[in-house]
Image (tube, rainbow, N blue to C red; front, side, top):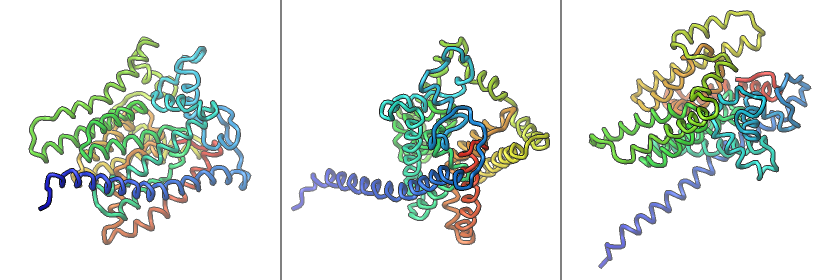
Length: 397
């Protein structure tokens, strides 16, 4: 006679072992693609300017080779915050526009990086990108169960045209890693973990609040699916991003007298002010026709096209009844358009992870498999060109 009292425990142990094996396997497969792509991209950024003898544009600060190839513009705000904190003597603006999560982690790793904030920043970016790739693959498999969809999702992340920012001293990789991991946790109904990870994302960028709002939509959808009318206690986890943001705004209020100091810094440093979305789009359209260098005109076209692509992605997700993902993308696009200055949109588009999942799925649909060739053919050349331009300090955003 079989002792059935032992069966539940042994079954749980077997499930845990299988789950761990699956995680290890998925991590290896995702990291193989991601780390290979990063190695090629770093080699390109280091070698192409030298081999092609490309002239370098102006840099805000000096950094020795090879670190100067992966740092520029916003990188120096993060470095300064990590080294000196906010509002050091003689600098009343505009580091406040940048949230503290990324610089704090840089500061924590600086002793292990020989005191170099740049090396620590690249380490944070490197690890965060790896987390994003693994979590994205797991999310694709959780949704579809299709190995090929998981593989393509990571591939499309790896060849994103502005992917140099997932390798440089910028916040995109850290925010993306935390966001996808939070989404994966929420999808698996691990809401305490989802809230904690989203709180981390909110410490990196204000967009963490948008992530929390979209996760709340996911939570409500799960309750409706389960036939439950009232939220459980784990819904409190979704308040964690609000606490993170409030803590930073409270710090600014104590230092400057204004909790809106981060917005004031954006207005002073980059002339970005809140506007209605139609005003932002109109400003972006008018900017295309102003006299400007060719590089700036191209950048403005890139900004507007990225916003239009984001709107199309949001509409597609909502039509497919992926409400939470549609809300996430819609809110992120709205932040771009609700501004008097649309800038850095192609870089921000890296964070719209539902797009990688949707493209990976669509590329497996009969009649749309041409995407498997078309997407790399379009994205890889753009990634190469924009990475070289960034490495020579000619282009940003």
